[in-house]
Image (cartoon, rainbow, N blue to C red; front, side, top):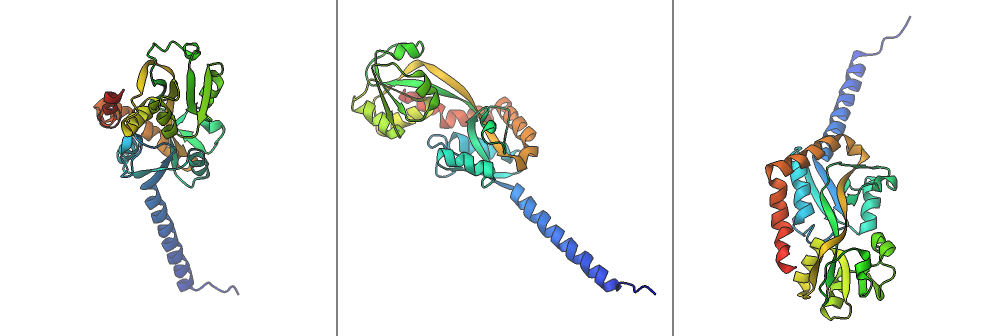
Length: 252
């Protein structure tokens, strides 16, 4: 004769499973309602109080999805490693194709901004008409920026430095003719150091930058892209741009 399993035992197991499932769901829900996105950038893209262009864009994109999101600054290479490993939930402002090296990252297809490589001058003023127009000058740029390593190869002199502060200090002291940096960060450093550098036109190159999310958040990608599109249509994007980046034009 078969022994029956006591009813109270079955009920106890079911209750325990329900409690465990609810706790797991609550933890997942809480995690989804608070994301941490990292970036390898600094001022004017991120500030200590969560501001800056990228900081405010990040918060607004995910606010429209009902999710709280913080942007943190991490050394550039580590920011990608952490995002790819899922330590952080995503990485802000990288070129298209970075997912080939970091396969756990999924690109939000609406671009964040164009990253403009521009020339800043300590003295000479001329129209930048391509890489060849830089040939007669002493040039400085950040060591490791591949687009510059590949294209600035035969100028009068090349100086590679580790930080933008060093670059703009060289300009301020007129120890170099020109430096190549990115537009908005360069203008911020001109303001910060009162370097007197002049922004030459037009830009020498540009690249589209995108937000990437870890694959565990891939389902958010279409909505995040749509939020960016909507922000550009309703003026929110332009307002953030004007208040964080465009205001720097007075220093060019």
